[in-house]
Image (cartoon, rainbow, N blue to C red; front, side, top):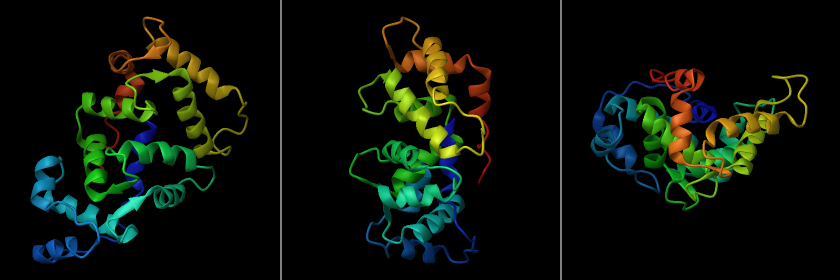
Length: 215
């Protein structure tokens, strides 16, 4: 799943040893947006306290204010795809992490989403992926929404990955995927259709487990 690539975006540039847990608690209060305490985040996610400390240091390194807006998110994400244009895909990804739709992603937003992508059940990961593709958040995926995401992925990967890329390739791929998913042929894909199709696709199921032990 393309969304999983976000795990590399806000990793810490340098892992420093923490000898005093109080220091980390003090750091949490030194930013404009103060995230939940580590104990609460540990209870709400599938990360250990140490993993949360590592993630927080990386997040704060990139976002000293404690929150990241869409433009900063795009700038960070684009660094990992210099051969292409990642701005559109980063926009969709940002909206998926910005669960309360307030125009910013806090550390809580980030680790809650990351916890699902890395450690969540298959059902949780597929729900998250459905939310990414459901651009207007109306509970359905249309062919145009799927095409918008697919085009954004092709733009992000760049021409280096596929030297002979025809303009109609994304639409052709969407036609194949959509026909498989839209079981009742009503022109939209529901979350049940999406999950059922993905669970019966070996390639998608294999991708669900790729990054479970990244941290």
